[in-house]
Image (cartoon, rainbow, N blue to C red; front, side, top):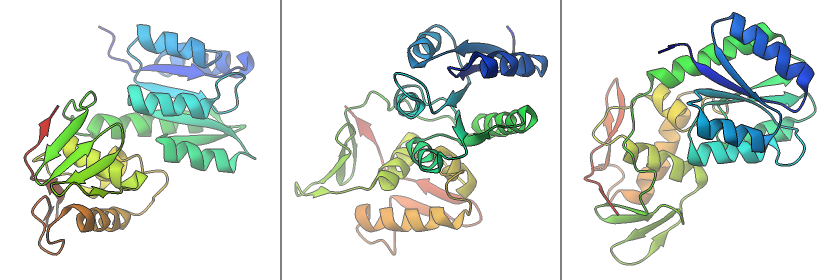
Length: 239
């Protein structure tokens, strides 16, 4: 079996797609290409893709929509290709779960370096529990309705969760009883490119604790591992 990573390039410009595929192939990667989101989805269904290089501006379904689809269904690392003027789209893409971005026009060596960096981080992350198809996740005293992103207590009162709080909670639920470093949490929550300082995770954990812990100052669900990071110690059941 070929151990080299399999990369998918999605760009409607053949003059970008072709030369970039050749360059990455010469640097040891297996390559597939697609000219639009529809073609990309067919490749993703038929091949084990390990990273997607994705242009934002494409006819039909754009790159941001496809990025959201990848995050929700495949959880494949994604690097966005953006124009200089698309700053808002870059921010939205990172919020949707993209791992990094490169501004056009770009040097292929820069993209190669970013691909290697994203793959290195992805390969170093701990494996997660298969909670993708769970409709509800229960951990005392809470019941999380995944599709609705709604957290319900035993008293029947719903607790609102922000997008970042929901994402962080899901990371903990997918890695129970496991010590996760701040760096790993940044990567697992897809905040590496958007949040460049690891203390941002401390702030997010503190906010989440205020919502799910009986006593946030003496947490029993999300515990601090001094010198290590955090670990989720609650017992989990899924339906």
